[in-house]
Length: 124
Image (spheres, rainbow, N blue to C red):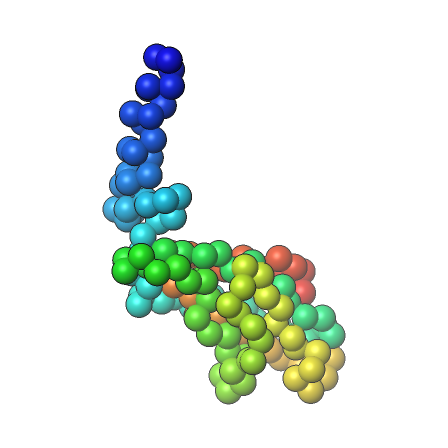
C-alpha cells in the first residue's frame, strides 16, 4: 500500500512536468507551439527508390493533436500529394518522372523541435 501511494504521488508530477526545453508534458505528450516550423533538407540523386518517413504526433498548446510534418516539397516546385497525416508515410519519387541520377532536393517542413525520421536514409 505504501508503494502504491508513492506511485500515485509521483504520477501527476510526470504528467505535468516541465522538460528541459521548458515545454510542458501532458498526458505523455510535450505541449508545443505548433505554429513554429523548421525544415529538414535532404539532397541526393534519384536511385529509383521511394523514401519512408516516421512522422510523430505532437500535442499543440490548444490541446489539439497533429502530426509533425506540415509539408513536403521536392526540387522547390513539386508539392507532393503524399498522405502525410499518418504516423509513417512514403515520399513517392518513382511516379514523379525523375530519371536515374537526377538531382533531387527534398524539404520537409515540420513542427519545430519534433523532426520526422527518415527510415531508409541510404536512399538519400
